[in-house]
Length: 204
Image 1 (cartoon, helix red, strand yellow):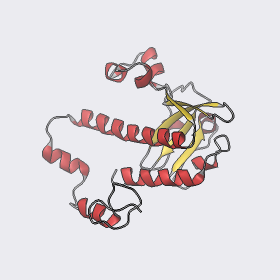
Image 2 (cartoon, one colour; image 1 turned 30 degrees about the horizontal axis):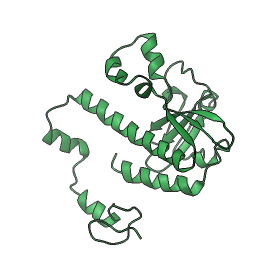
Image 3 (spheres, helix red, strand yellow; image 1 turned 120 degrees about the horizontal axis):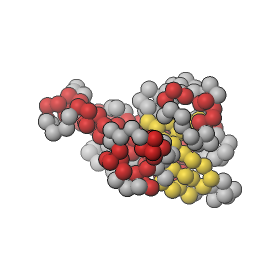
Image 4 (cartoon, helix red, strand yellow; image 1 turned 90 degrees about the vertical axis):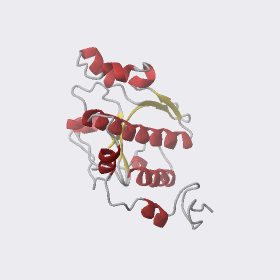
């Protein structure tokens, strides 16, 4: 049985805190941004927000990568930073057509080893739990890509063609990742990864 590293009582995750200890450690009443304003003078607001958003996105990507790996999928990082290391820094503020094409590359290519089917996966984090066609980059070229949306409570999925057809992800929509017949995923595993998302993004 997993135990809290602080008090020893039951917790769902090894090496983690129980709910009470987690709340006690995070009950200062100050927001993350307030703490940063008090203690850091290093980053400009714009650079801070850029880095903060990037970290949230990377956490969401890692969650989805590990989810598919745990279910036996082959997962390949495909996005611009993986194909052309260091390119993100070079493209900051660059608005050319080539730069836009590089930015639009999906995050992953995944393969189902049973059927040998291959899919483009784009991972997004939205605290609101909402995603619609207008959130896609303009003229997004990957019509056959799947958008997997990680929020504070759910992991949902929609295709780019469905978005362009008028469908969207909302906090109340039922387009859960576990309902995608293409992937045939174990819903209990997805529930476990939703719990990870809650733990990582609760204060975001």
